[in-house]
Amino acid sequence: MDDEIDIPFRGIVAQSLAGMYVIQDEVFQYVNATFAGMLGYTPEEMTGMHLRQAVVPELQDEAVANYHRRVSGETPSIRYMTSGRHKLGHAVHLEVHGSSLLYRGRPAVVGVGINITEQLRQQEELRQSRERLRELAAYINQVREEQRARISRELHDVVGGMLTSIKLDIQRIRRRNSDAGIESIVVGVLDLVQESIEVVRSISEDLRPGVLDHLGLQAALAGALRQFSERTEIACELQGENVSLQLAQAKATAIYRICQEALTNIARHASASSVIVRMHCAGDRLRIEIEDNGRGLPSLTPTGKSIGLLSMAERAREFGGSLSARAGEAGGTCLIVDIPLEEGEA
Ligand SMILES: Nc1ncnc2c1ncn2[C@@H]1O[C@H](COP(=O)(O)OP(=O)(O)OP(=O)(O)O)[C@@H](O)[C@H]1O
Ligand SMILES: [Mg+2]
Image (cartoon, rainbow, N blue to C red):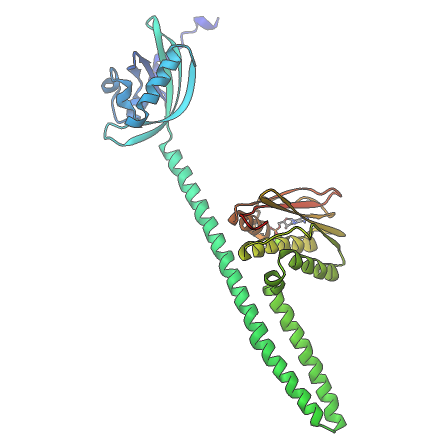
């Protein structure tokens, strides 16, 4: 029978890698070497020590209250995080789990404690490093948009302007020319210049859609969808085009870029035949859904080198929003961008 087996509990407790202790009358009656070691003491030094002495001052009341909640039977078992006070004065972060039981015939708390200082430090480091990564992503997006806007402006104003001057000059030559051979060359050059003007305009517009600044997000999205549909022959629909929005420029740009990447992904990966973009304002949140009827849901967890979805999520997060995905009604993918609106934006 089990109770006949003589398990050497004392030896197990003494050698345990987890700290163990027994507290009675707010005083440590027993601590193993691991628990005492966490706080810089020997078991002999800690035995007889008041509970308060082992805890940082600001958490002493809580520790004593938890001790009494357990021995009174109010909450017989409590697991919580606290900060022990090391013999040298610094804090040691502990996770403790203590339960009430009878020791020498009276209520006591027997507990297990582990040192989570390193774990908390690593968590904090991870949190800081994520935060820095996020700041970096936001900074890269911002610099990228500024560069795009600058190159777009220069292309449009400088190169576009030069091409227009060239066109006017060629037209002047054409008016003064009567040679049929030269006329046909001039017509060819004029066509080429006109084409160049259009290419420059389109690259410039691609880099920074002027319509975004002048007519707002919906008009820019409607334009992008029209172009997308022409290029890919995928049927597109924009719902909620009339939602009234006064978005800050950076936010409108971010949402536009998110939709742009979603469309690029649909063209590249989805094998879809239709796309619906829905815009919808509810209270102080703007929700945009981009739904295709293609191959289905991508994983939003970044894999390998693809950064499209990652960068979409970062752009949304930059404005306090989020990116999520669900299966589309027709089996494809529905990406959902949820962005909070500031006062005056809706
Ligand atoms: N609408 C979609 N339908 C089906 N699969 C998709 C869709 N959008 C994305 N995916 C899948 O999710 C993956 C990740 O997309 P993501 O945009 O992050 O990377 P990518 O498009 O492959 O590369 P890039 O970094 O150039 O954007 C894609 O490789 C694709 O497999
Ligand atoms: Mg992509």
